[in-house]
Length: 154
Image 1: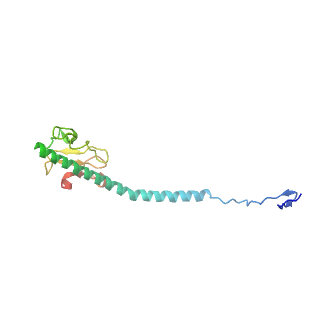
Image 2: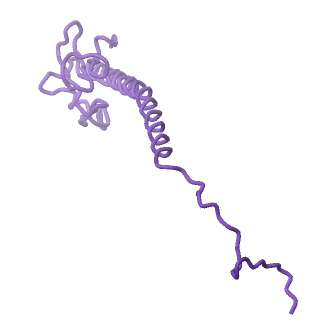
Image 3: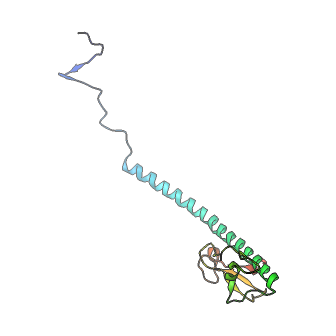
């Protein structure tokens, strides 16, 4: 029989292509270096993005304080008084004869999950709405800074 493929016999055995005894692969050291570099890059990105997250939460708190202030002024226009401290801003979300759905759809909480503080009378205005920031306590700087309706000019 005639065969089209050519086989060579070396030392009584057929030889296939011989493989290089050194395999082409990554070493453990190379993999560890790559993982460390990726970790450093992820840490740098996280630190730069964190400031944007803090400022966006503060902006949301400012918008919600402005919305609550507007609802309080509407309440005053209808009832000729502001809610007392015992009523708080919760009264703005309750339906009444003049506001069937209430002035607010729900009682808002600040972006950090804490309730807004309502003070009547305020320090320099008829009322003051306060978000105590990320720590939920008075005072602080950065993410923990207080946001008030008086500071916003509301």
